[in-house]
Image (cartoon, rainbow, N blue to C red):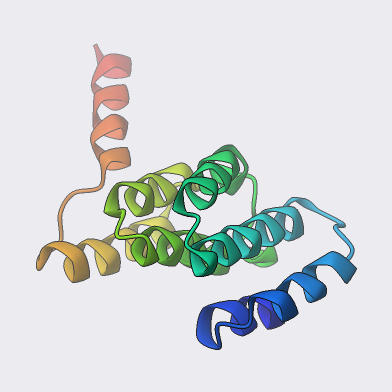
Length: 138
């Protein structure tokens, strides 16, 4: 999938990227998410932002199921880049919030929010975690 991503994202070669993903086997959730994200990036390259946004939102539930070993950081970064390429920071933020929690998610959020907002902004998933902790403590 990385080859297909490079073809469309860095080189603008949509048809070539689609050929690569059409021939690729989908063995697990990471590969399925990757394929959908490459297709969404192809939609952006064609100017079909509505189709790209739908594909991006469709993978949000699966992002949390992609393990770090199978490429969580990569697919999350691709999802963020798709949102950014459409000038949709809301979709980028949702992609970051959809993934599994932990140090890696916090690092991705901090890097993204610093770049987008000029400072590190608390991630929405940290706010929910605090609410859950307070509810469980009381």
